[in-house]
Amino acid sequence: MPYPGFPTDMQSIFGSLLTTSKGTSIIVENIFENRYKYMHELKRMGAKITIEGKTAVIKGIRRLNGAVVNSTDLRGGAALVTAALAAKGTTTVENIEYILRGYEKLDMKLQNLGAKIYIKNT
Image (cartoon, rainbow, N blue to C red; front, side):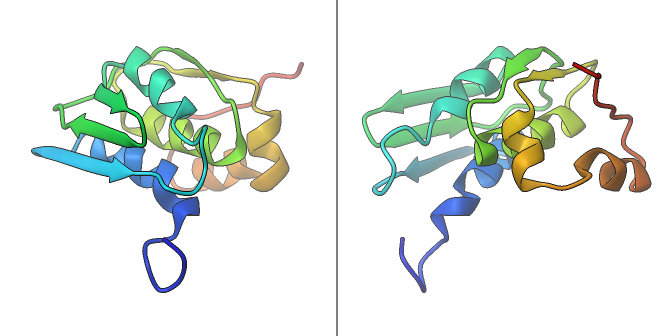
């Protein structure tokens, strides 16, 4: 929603967090048509997500699994990195150009917090 509602730019990150939250969560996206692209990638990691039109239903699971996923936009890519940090195993996020465009030195910042993350030279 527009201010003072929940900021739509945070929807992807929260969608990622909800995949491992207890219970069932519902997100309704009324502003951007293609905002849910990242959710298809989260499903590759084992997330239980059903998308029906503007509504996404997320059933929380104990843990995501590492997988090869594809970043399709800036915020969705950040959501995949967030999911990868919580996942069991190794996750490879492809097409990171989107992420690097909006999050300067993200790998170094996350390493400083203890994450095992690196960027392959392309």
